[in-house]
Length: 191
Image (cartoon, rainbow, N blue to C red; front, side, top):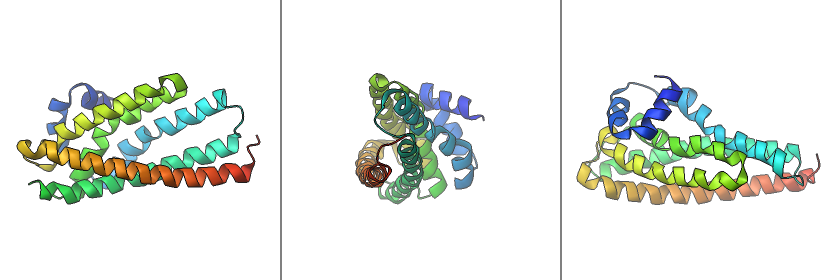
């Protein structure tokens, strides 16, 4: 299935798409190359373009470094969250499988990644946040078909995993801020 169709289906009809995803045979490499890496690039690229158009005080070099750092750290963070999902699933009666955990994390992140397009216009960036919140519902909806967490335990599994995601987000934000902030100071904000 092509990336656009999959993204559209998981966002608009998750209850029919999750069983299809659960049945697919794939690998971590295929998920990253064919889905995660391209979709995750939307937000950083759009943020960089917005920086070029709207933030006159910051240099292009610093913005480019920031975009690359954010992208790389988020690629790694996605795998960390998948590892957490793999660990947590059996605690809630589900199955521990890294590929299935990565499917759950990646496809439930689709709205946030696609919503990165709204970063082009800073005033619309709130829409990206709203789409990210919808991703939490997708995580809940996919827990049973993808990692076999029983339906009656899927809500608690989702809450625990969301708390873990928030913690990972704050850690990655701190890392990005330290790297990008140091990079901006070193570049002196020149173009």
